[in-house]
Every structure is written in structure tokens, then in C-alpha cells.
Length: 254
Ligand code: ZN
Ligand code: FE
Image (cartoon, rainbow, N blue to C red; front, side, top):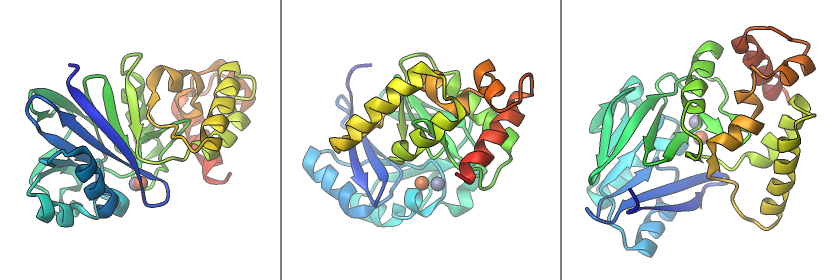
């Protein structure tokens, strides 16, 4: 359990790249392929040899450099079954309930479709690599799926145990925080977090990974069942999915 190492680094304008390394087997997985040069630099810096790419969804800033990195490293590529035709160089298609191994470590696949139809997350040893499904204080735009599908997907992440580290694919937290306080203005935990986020970003530090219990307490997209949020939206007693849809639509227009 303790011999996994995670190396996080910025890519493009606001993406994060992640390398996951198992010391015992020497295997290394790269979560998505946002940009080749920083991924190759991270491999050189760590001295880790890439053996796998794990894709979360088909968008270019997640799978666009698959083939270039596969050619350079000889790694294999695992990705979402629901988007198999859109994942360059895919070797293995996986979906909900499947298991992907990194050495002796198991990553369990969750289908978190909504942002894209087949979007998956990888959950292993208290870490969840969630792509563009859940963000710190936010969630992905619902481009391909329905609001109901996205809400259902977020509930799977919401069900992960306290302490689970959430590795989101983007540093969107400052903008998400500005929106969150318009939905949940009386939430003391959110206010405290907004101050922490401002301090981290002022020091040019990442707000990722986040932690699921913190998201439960402060992320408006996980709080559609909260009485305070519902009252603020004049939606007391409404179905959670309708409250979620209202929050998502407000964010799209924020
Ligand atoms: Zn995306
Ligand atoms: Fe993205």
C-alpha cells in the first residue's frame, strides 16, 4: 500500500500531468497525455520508465499525445471502452468494475460519464484519478451526457471513503471558488477554503490533489441535497438532480 509514488506536474495552460510509480515492480503509469514535452521531462527527472498510459476520456488535452508517447516509450494504453474508437493507440478498453494493475496494485475503474459519454476514473490505494469529472470546488461541463448521468457519476465519487485524494486534471479552482460562494454563501467551511485557495495560488502552489471529504463539505456540485443550498436556490425539497442541473447551468453562464 505504501510503495506507490505520485509525481504531479503542470502541462499546457492549466492541465496537470501525473505519473504513478510502483517501487516494487518498477512500473509507471501516466494519467492522460496532455503534453509530450513535460511528460518526457517528468520521466527523465524521476528516472522512472513509462510502462502504461491510463486515459480518462477522449479530449485532445487528455489523449492527444498517446501515440507519440507510446512510440517513445513502448508503453501500453488503457482507456475508456465507451470511447474506444476515439482513443489513439488504445490497447485495452475498460469500464465500470474492471481492474487495471500497476505491479501488484489494483486500480478499480469507475464509469463517470457526463462530461464525455464514456469518461472513466481510476481508483487505487486511496487515490482517485478523475480527469474532467470532478474538480476542486467544481465539476466538468456536461458536453456529451445528460445532467442525470453526470449527477449519478458524481455520486460514485462522493461515495469514496474520507481521505481519498482526488487528482483532477485541471487547475480551475480559483474560478470555481468564485462561483461556489454564489451558490453556498453561508457555508463556513467553504469560506475558509476560499481563503486557503487564494493563499496557495498567490504562492503559485497547486490546489490539486483535493480530498473527497473536503469536496463533500464545500463543492456545490456535491451539495445539491443540502438544505442550505436548496433554500438559497429557492429549490427546497426539489430532486437532487434538478438542483444539480440548476447549479451546472448557472456555472455555464457565470
Ligand atoms: Zn475534457
Ligand atoms: Fe480537460
